[in-house]
Image 1: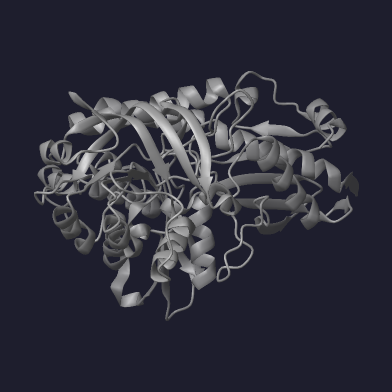
Image 2: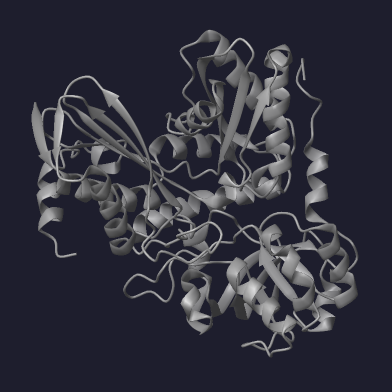
Length: 311
Length: 188
């Protein structure tokens, strides 16, 4: 049994909020650059040039990539042998509060969907937990902007609709979104489970490295087919026409009821923002960050630095 | 791309010269307003009250910027989805509003109203908030400060890049994407 203080989680969540909003992943940059080469429409190329310039500038200046710094969606994989001393959920919310304040990120959360008063600190986060074996902890912060989230959809198909029905629905969602979801898109698709499971699968699909393929050959083929079909739509970057409407389609599946075929489509703009940190054997490591690439991914010292910061 | 330099406030002559698809670089004053500010303005008009800002000749940019980091006038400031402002747009056009900047489609009613009120809808680069912020020279809150990121700001911009999306002649930039549509893949 390992014990960590909840305050460590606060410090790491705060850092992940800031990093995720400022730095585009290397995987995303590579796919964007390849898309720029492939795009035939002059207007589409202009948009992709601007998105690449924006990513470079945001990184240089420590400025958020987009003004919509999102609602903080936090995925926690908590080892069943890990003891967190303190209030885990409060620690995550506090991390979001600190990260959004210190990072000059926009506070976009309202306290009630109907009375719509801004909470002023971007809390609460939306938290998803998974209990895993061992004493590890993995934290992923995925800020989700509303432009693409609003154009996402779920449909309970019939088993008879089959894979063709799934394809038609995914294409339908992308076509309806048109320019509103800021294409080029990353399309997360969840198939199976129940209504809420499909939605969660679709969101988790957005966390996969861009351009990676499913291990399941049936699913990998569907991903490739969907990507091609979406890119034949002509919607193009920002909906202004072109060959590049999506950068990637990621599909996740789960077993489901004999009578069910739930399908969820979670759209993301090109800024597939997410950052993770893991705590194996008591040392925090950032995954996929600039620090990780430079081999400086041991952030246990940073952790103490952040914990020592006045907030 | 060849960009046309235009300045705000927009004159009728400038509006008449703009065509959907034209790239522009806008300089001058922009007002910001998004969902909550629109709702409040239209409710105020409904009660017969004056707006806190005079919209005659003005351009509204649909944006909720991130807070300005130290040493900067504003944070990231890219466009939000314009369609959410559709229900509030026509009363503001009636107040003399001449331009709007955002991203995405407008409703057919708003598009038709552009011809009637001699106004233009521009789109700018969604997702390029850091890049667009560089064109903003000054920023201050003008009204509704309690709305936080949704407050009405005044931006003074220099060469802010945008494209004419809908003009007064019925032109629509998004209709051009049809040109890039390809036959569906086998099985679709």
